[in-house]
Image (cartoon, rainbow, N blue to C red; front, side, top):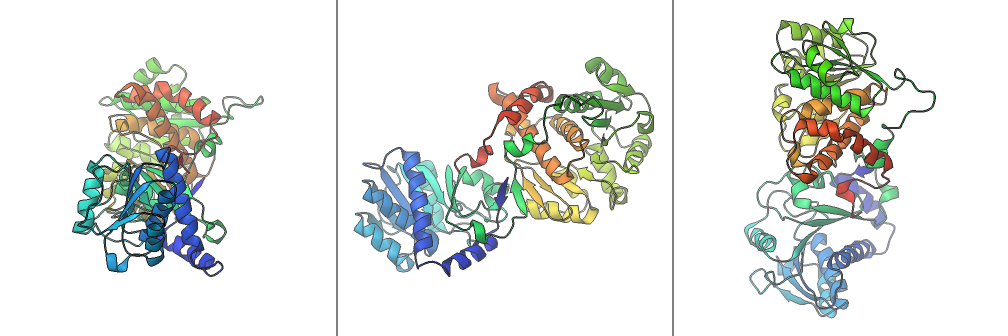
Length: 487
């Protein structure tokens, strides 16, 4: 599991470590790690052209010291000082000793010929978009031939939320120090950060326990263990599905199929789309009636395509009145937003799965801080909130959060949410902690989307077909998330 630490948490740990080490040691660790990653990305140093955009303060110092390391190995390094009078003096001296060139924001910067561009304009303390001189250089770097590498956090990105208020540096890679910051993996910051590489500078023992995390394949594999010799269909988790209608029968088929394909123990369907479910999935036990008629289950999924009429409201109220975990999705979210007391304060786990528009029906704006928004709604309702998006966020009522690391934009198509609901219901029926279980479901859903999209655009039924392969991939993988592959 990868911990995500806020800028304040990282600074607090740095302060402790700075008090225990000689002056400059921490910056040298960061700069050496940064230069090492750059060398790996370039493949060689001698003869390559590197431009370092260096602002005032320590972020610029990191870029200058890293530039000195690269220049000492034969790279042609040009440092562009955004504020020459406030450039880091020791870093600047080191670069000059190593043979690097120095210029101001209006001087020859080499961006049109650079093999690599370092973004050391502002670090984790930066707020708001880039100022015009830096924005112009960032735009030229993005349009030029050089590989763009951000130092710690792309300039213009909020380290905690990923918010981008104006222009920001677009990096293909980000080398971050001490801990992965939330803003690198959520919101617009995720798109600016590229591949994230974590450099250990010794902060680990001094960091507060993170309240936000990313799961890896290895973490999710624990939710997908193959059957033991003594298992039977009842011990693998029995999930009930209340979904579909005459208007949307496909939602029931997709949700039921996803539940079956994730952990094929037993799935019971109750609703008005039974004929379609029977035809598609003879393995499911189908009841053309109320949820109470379906038989004993260990978790419910309610909402995909079920409608919002009185009958649907009654079925939702019925499953929420049980002492079982419930996934509240799609139409059930619309009804829960109208009557939040249906959900608020349930004794059993409840997981809500809104996209942004569904989320805002509860009267809570998403805004630019997606983790904070999910936490607020989770605390208000006493439920787990899975906020769908490019980087899905899961938050529990106690504040623990997860940011998903898998997926593809090809998942933005009808029915994929029904598949996620089925996956989540199947995992939740095993009795594991609901917030981490929801994060595991999002991870598996994203992995499945990546497999299904490998040959082009996908439709939701492709996900159901690819689920067994994705489960096998996750079970067999000992690697981290896609986004931390450089760590």
